[in-house]
Length: 587
Image 1 (cartoon, rainbow, N blue to C red):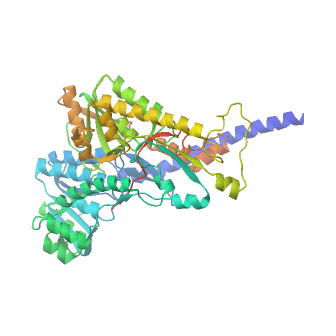
Image 2 (cartoon, rainbow, N blue to C red):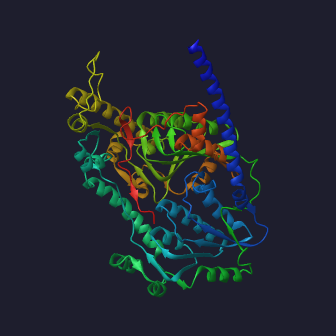
Image 3 (tube, rainbow, N blue to C red):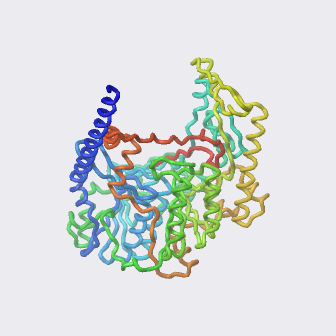
């Protein structure tokens, strides 16, 4: 009887908990929507009916795919809209043909942006100028390497009289924890093909290897040459600026004025009033933020479609609820959506990935290879290792000037924590085995020679498959791909020289090429996946970060699966992965 009573009480408690949790969830969502009401009014999109100056600032980080993030700090919930790179650059380009856009104003204060994004924005601004002859104005108190690169496209670059231009150049590298792991008593067993597949060196070393320095130097020297040519004022030579920046990274106001780097002005208000007066606009209402601006183009809804399918993040077997990873099921769903849409004439695959799981990469390769519709690849900041693998079968591959690609190779990484677990902490793993291989990967013992041979066989097999896939896709001899491979990364320019890509260009170039191949002159661009609504984002946030909603669901008796940790030490150990986590300056 007592057992029955407990069971009944337990069921009642569960039902009550679910009801309470449900109502709390409804109240929470209602509160969020109400608290965001004012914000939604502020971000209302507008097609211009009166002349304006298009105002750009980049204080909110730019995402490859547009994101709406929920900020739970403070007394109110707030919505953070991270602009998508394509939507942002497309607005800039299309504003050239909008008669109500009179100029562009770049507010480059307090901006954190990576070089590839800065380059894509600069290219869009360059197109704006070529198509319209409308002026571009730039302003900041302090310019940095990447922000001055954007500003250099402007007709007039302004800075405050107390400001500086700080141009230290580019850096790229990794954080090394080899000494830390050694002190902890953890070693790493690495199986790789080629001296350039340096993916794991940050786990067993404390500095870049000569091979890593060679590869990274080639990349950043190319970046620096593009950048230096772009930022040099008309009244001095590139050689002069090169020598100047080798002697000091700081250009002070009077020197900046003398050399033509900037025009000095007292403050931003003064500048905005001057610009407004030039176009007979109201100082306060004469500027419109690009986040609110809608180009005044004709309706394209009924035109043939060019689908841009995004492949962003690491390639993994399965992922959590985040969209920031490439899983087989999710990618197949998105790609097939474009393939099965009769209105889609061609597909542009936009890749920004360091690679990852070898088997998933091969499945994606086959999916793209057998596509009945033409596929053109646009590489973003990164399309390396597995990211290059999935690009290879496309008809044409574009890479941007600041793209890192290549890294054709395979690596397997296994930790050995014998010293830490057994000798320092007194932890041991012991098993009864039906076969001698059952405890392969035991963290408190080293591999036997037989086990190492099995792993080496797998690594060689996967590597040979990689170079064969690239050779077939790019119409190159296998031996040539092997020489280009061995884990080596390339700048986009070097990759074009050796035949790994076809052209240097941006996403817009890839879209135009896909349309040409599909023989359509007018088209509508659709992005896959579509941007999530705020409620979808909210639920995703709750699932990922144990926010209040997940707490209420827990009270209601709903169990949430924890996030799956993606790391080097994945279940199968075989990776098409970029050599290391690339760490770049963002100023």
